[in-house]
Length: 358
Image (cartoon, rainbow, N blue to C red; front, side):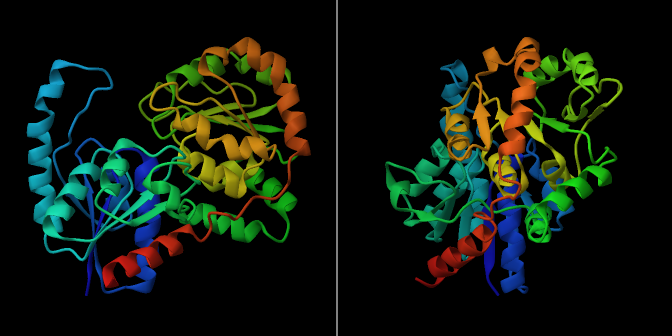
């Protein structure tokens, strides 16, 4: 029986791919022990126990984006985090990392313990934690081609999909048009009315929410259905006409399928799930970080399934002027989804098996 440690906490963009790989690993190796590493502040505290996997928390290494006095604490916080990670990793057979704050201590602990490391990079521009981990490992996988650095020669695996999205892709193969109409009905919307789905990532987006709140009357004047995921931490507006705000969408596969236009951030997971079952998107990349959200959306823009706008340009006036055009572009986009990521989890499992046995 092998022990596999998965490091990918913080946001859904790190946790969901890790969960997809864990589920796939259990199919092939039902007797193995799978342990997730996380921190007390990440979504893994909800998502991992709900998926019935073991979770071990380690101290978070907080790194501000701008130079600050808190940087003086980084070496001490990192040492503490590595020490706790090593307690879990020392007897493991492999560590699979997916980026984020929890991954860097895991990679260092694995290197110290002589445990093989497998790394999956979801973004088109690798993050700092995975770039650090790549120094210790040759077993690398990516969701998008990377044009420089060690990840340039990584396995192009795609991004592991959540089980409901993968299932929706498979179930829709025979008749995508009927699948999209049926998804609208399951969500409680008319099948023959255009549906706009707005989401700002797992935590919601105040910037996007503010624009949408100012556009509710316009949506209703145009006779549109609107499903707005505002995020669990944000105030829930009142429903009005065809506008339905919710704190969180549980039936995400249905929301992607049903939407004629998706408006949201272009995180790696969102782009991958949209690619599988979505129709057309207006992406508003997060304006902080290393610009990876702009790059994530590029392949969808290239095949006329999406367009990108800077957050500063995303306004109620912009929506009023461009929404009709977005719906026209959606009707011209392919009715079917794209299965490029459907087998990503299987590929990462195979790479991990190779790392253990090499």
